[in-house]
Image (tube, rainbow, N blue to C red; front, side):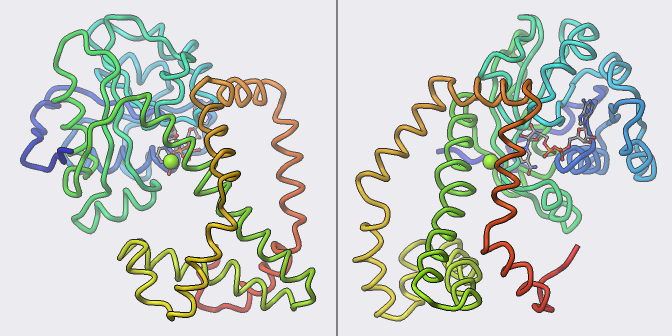
Length: 330
Ligand code: NAD
Ligand code: MG
């Protein structure tokens, strides 16, 4: 697998071009500021009533209404919430695109699941930093970068790989390494990761372990430290040294017990469920469900949020974290 670094990219490809960054949230502010400081001509596109306008202006960036920014731009990076992109595309983006313009994304959802279908004479690419926006910004100011994925969906003028790599360089990605992917691979693996492993899988694992201990009569404070708090320490060890590195650092008792009990928790049945989750993503059912959920005013999503906020682990966790002076509170 090839990793692209600063030497593989050429920022002068963006010379004379204007990049419009739509949205000034987590990713938007990081892309816009990093590109600006890399010498790229950047403008920010926002709604006329957006509270972010003032922030972007204070940061020294030119701000326009979304439609106006698209008109002025050669490259339009869409950093709006995924579920809002289609409406903004129909209303403000598509009518203002010129042949030769390129549309860019940091996640493939709307292109891969056909919510946005740009005309054939518009280039479409992705540059997706593999980290949250505040990190993309902070790491850049420290002279480093966050690794990125890039992908080309359609390339009418046969120049988008250079443009995408230059864009990735402008946000700092080629300082850390950039990998080529496809919209399909990025979208489906990203959704699977957050559902089965990262957000969904890990939280259910933690909460179920917590509830089993509490039901057996152990104090919730102890259960919280065991099942949630210590997760970070274990994950940090795996981040640095892989699974073997983690097992090297814990006791032999923990290693033996973990290796024998782990497959009882995540067993053949769990694997089958994971495969079903992946299939539900690949066949478009998850995308359709989420799009319809948004059209329905998120009735289910809000109900799930209520249910989650009432979990005992959240109550005890809130109290305990308030006593942990070393955890940043904001
Ligand atoms: P965000 O919610 O932090 O910011 C969205 C921005 O869009 C805000 O400035 C908001 O004011 C603006 N906005 C909201 N509704 C709008 C509308 N109707 N019209 C115009 N502007 C509107 O979003 P984010 O997390 O930065 O995500 C942006 C994109 O980046 C998404 O495609 C997401 O999948 C992708 N991405 C995010 C992360 C991350 O860490 N957050 C990582 C990789 C990729
Ligand atoms: Mg992700």
